[in-house]
Length: 264
Image 1 (tube, rainbow, N blue to C red):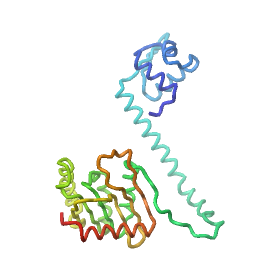
Image 2 (cartoon, rainbow, N blue to C red):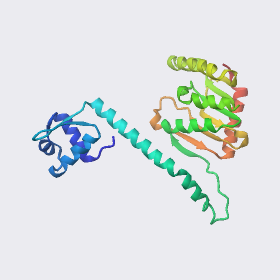
Image 3 (cartoon, helix red, strand yellow):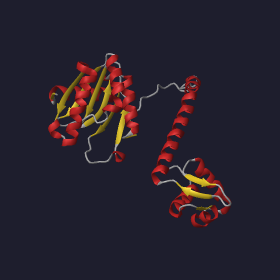
Image 4 (spheres, rainbow, N blue to C red):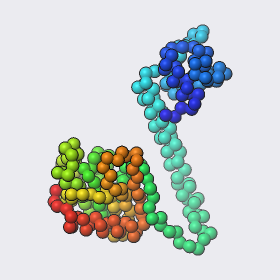
C-alpha cells in the first residue's frame, strides 16, 4: 500500500502494541534504533500515527480505517502530481520528438494490430477517450451498461457532435434479476439523456463487448470477450486502431444489428 519495509513493519507492530515508546517499537519491529525515529517521523507526515510529545515521546496508530483512508488519499495525490508533471512536459516532448520521428528510415510506420490493456480503470478511461474521439459513428456492445454513470458526459458530448450512436444489449430475460434491473434503469436514463439520438437493440448474446468508432473511415475499437464469472482483475481487453481490424469489427456489429437483434 505504498510503504517501505521499515515503515510497514513499524506501523504493523505499533497497531499491535498500541501507544508506545520508539525504543520499545524498535525492539518489537526489528527496525534499527538508529532508523526508528526517522521512520516514525515519516509515518507521522503521512498522517498514519499520532505523536504525543514528552520525555520520551509516545507514538500511537490511527484506526485501520483511518490508515487506509490516509494511504488512499496520499496515493491519489501522488498520482495527480505525477500526471500534472507529465502533462506539463507533453507539448515540449511532442514538439521535439516530431523533429526526429522516423527521420532516419525510409519505411512507413506500421499500425500495430492490437494493444492489450487491463479491464477496470484502464479500460474505462480508454472507453471514455474513444467516445470523445468519435466523429461519425459510435457502436457499443454491452450487457447492461453498468458503467453508464461513468461515461454519460462523453455520450452527451457525442450526441452534441452529431455522432450516430448504436447500442447492442443483452435481452433482459438472459440476465439475472439484478442486472436486468440495472439495464432497465440505464435504458431509461439513456432515453432521457439522448432521446432519439441513440438506437438500442437487444440480442440473446453479446459475444464481444466494447465500442467501435468510425469503422468505415479508419477509426478505433476497444473490445473484450464475454466471460461471465471471471473477475475483472483476471480479464484483459484489446485496443486497436488497425483499419482492417476496426472495419471487420464494425461489419460484424452491423451484421448482428440487422440479423440477430430486436428492438428494445
